[in-house]
Length: 96
Image (tube, rainbow, N blue to C red; front, side):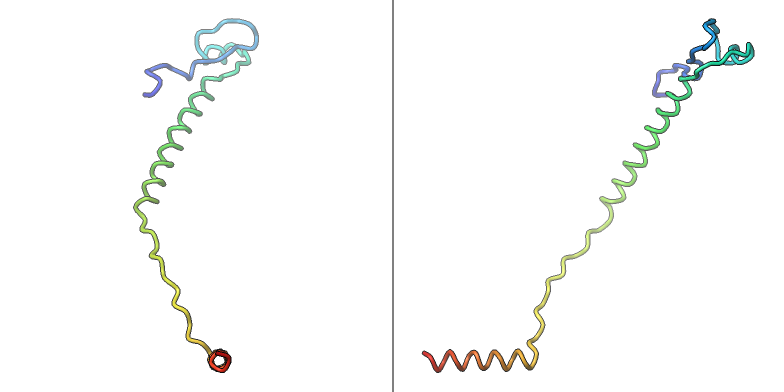
């Protein structure tokens, strides 16, 4: 489909030095062959599947709502903190 109809399955190198038209013919002759066409075909399939998964995950992440930001409300001062603030305020008024 993406290779324009090129048959990658029959791309190979016969390691005995002879020439064969197909990979099956080389196998029938008992020749060792390096079938690099199968590897290229699998790489192309992997890249297609990986790109589809990438775009699906990217679309799913864009649809997912972002969490709302919650503003932190300061807690009310404890009794000890309230007492310290009163002492601080009274010291300010006696100085001034």
